[in-house]
Image (tube, rainbow, N blue to C red):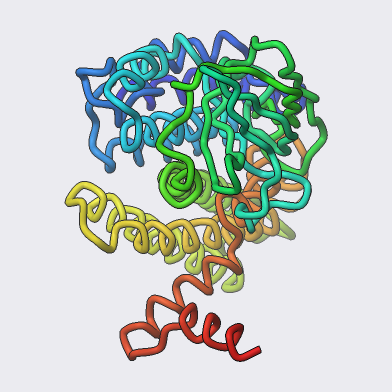
Length: 379
């Protein structure tokens, strides 16, 4: 989209400073909001741009090609708005979506805990009823844009069942602890979140208790994977282009790097990785636009392929650029670090492999989950 392209071009040179300083400036977050990039997939009736999944994907690819943290801003906003669109009541959608779509409020997704990462069913954050209010107590870790969020979508448990609750940052008992110096996404305002007997109105519960993980958080994570996948495509495309440009002009011992077969082979593999990742992301976008049953599975495949491609292509780019690629504030150096984080975020590569394999095996009558349940009963 033109707005994303223009914003990406305007911040290309500054992105290294943000990574070094560990902060995405408020002016940039505001610029993204004014450009309508925080509500691309939100219906126009709720203040959004009514964009297609493919348009949202291209926004994330273009922003991801200059700054992973800027792409992450779109990702976390989309995760929360998607959950509201799918599971919110008409009153909740009317209250929250317009301000989120216009960037008048910034959102964050708070699910992970110290002992609940991949296995989110193990969260211990409590959600208890107190008359017309809910009280939330617990702690969350690695919350992207947790430092600057105005509202958090928090996963907890109510009566032993998963519950998703919207919690405003300014409520008594909410505290944030900035996280700095992490491997990647250094400008994404990551924070740990503490919730000490925080009270919110009962209407902040998003969907009934019991649906908080499988439905609300499931929707958010699915949208997170989709936007992360497209952001990985943008990273890989940018690094492949940088590596090719360097190889075409860099001389070494009287020979241009591109004259070496090993360099051309490295670039060739990168080109195939990038093309394959983009096509799988496009397939996921088509599935989502058509509301096809395989949309979630196609997104898992796209995210797995795109994150893997980003790791391989950024690694190849560092090797091609040598010392220039190893500079921590260079585009290739930044993306080399960010790409490794993308293999883990919104579902690790190893977990994705199991989901993909299970989907394949079910076609042949093998159900791993059912067999596991029977094995536990026998034990």
